[in-house]
Image 1 (tube, rainbow, N blue to C red):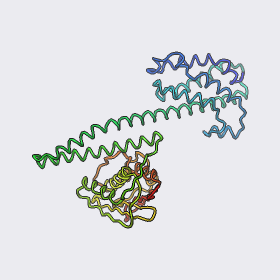
Image 2 (cartoon, rainbow, N blue to C red; image 1 turned 135 degrees about the vertical axis):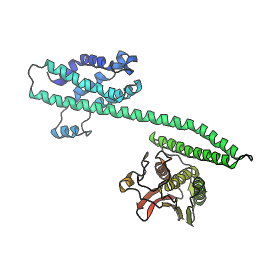
Image 3 (spheres, rainbow, N blue to C red; image 1 turned 90 degrees about the horizontal axis):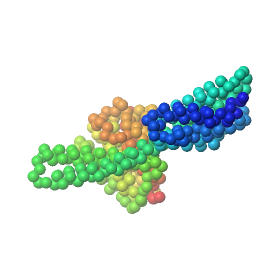
Image 4 (tube, one colour; image 1 turned 90 degrees about the vertical axis):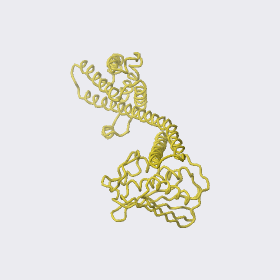
Length: 377
C-alpha cells in the first residue's frame, strides 16, 4: 500500500500513538485533556498525505529539500502553525514540541514498514515525500512557536520597564529634595549626587528598553512635531553629558539657521544617546565635538570622538539592537552602562523624522556619526 493511503486509513491509530507520547511530555501534559494532547495531529497527517499525492517535478523536489517555500501546502502549514501556537500556550517547551514530530515520523514509518510484504521502488519516493511534508510542518510549527516566545518576552520586558518607572521617579525626586537641604555636608552631597546620577542612567536604560520593545511589537516611534531650536536641544544635551563627566569639555560648533519642526523629547533621546556613546567609546580624554549646520531644508548634526576606530566588521551591525561592544580594544575608561540599545534608538528616532544617519571611523580621524534631518515633515 502506498504510504499516503496508509496514513489516511490508519490516521486514528497513528494519532493514538501521538497522544500516548505527548502525555509523557511533562509537566505541561499533566493538565491536558485527550483532545488537547491530540491537538492538530490528525489534520497534519491528512494534510501530509494530500501533499504526497500532489505532483512534483525533480526541480521542485530539490528546491523543497533546500528549504525553499516552493510547493508548500497551505492546509499543512495552517495546521502546523496552530499546533506550534497552542503548544506554546499550554506550556510545552520547544524541545518537547519538536520531539512530537520526531515521534510522529518514526511511528508512521514503523507502522507502514511493518505492513509491507515486499518493498517497491515507489515506496522510497513515498518516504522522501513524507519526510518533506513532516519537515515542512515542523519548520512551520517551530517558526510560530519561536514567534510566540519572542512576543511573550517582549511583553514581559514592556511590563517590567513600565513598572520600573515609578521607583526610579521616587529615587530622583527624593535625591532632589535631599540636595536642597542646607545642613547637608559636602560628603553627603557627593553621595546623593551619585544616587541621582545613577538613577538618571537607569531611567535612560528603561526608556531605551521600552522603545526597543515598542518596535519589536510592530509599532513605530510616534512623534509630534513642534517648532523648536535644535541649537538649544544640543546645548542642553551637552550640559547634561558634562554633568555626568566633569572632565568632559565638548566643543560645540554651529552654522546657519537651526530652527525646525521636530519632536523635542525624541530629539533629546537621540542627542543623549549619540553624545553618551561618544563619551563611552571614545578616547579616555573624553574629547568630543558636536557640529550643527543648518541648511535651507535640513539640519546636519555630527558627533565626533577620538580613540580607537570601530572595527570594520562591526560597522554593518552598529545600529542593531543589543550590540554593546563597538570595539573590544577601544580606549575608554567607562564600563558599559547601557543595554546596547542606544544607537538602535538613535536610528529609530532618525527614521521616524524621515532623516538619515551615517558613521565613519578610522585610525587618525576617529569616529563621526552624522545625522541629517529635514526641517519639516
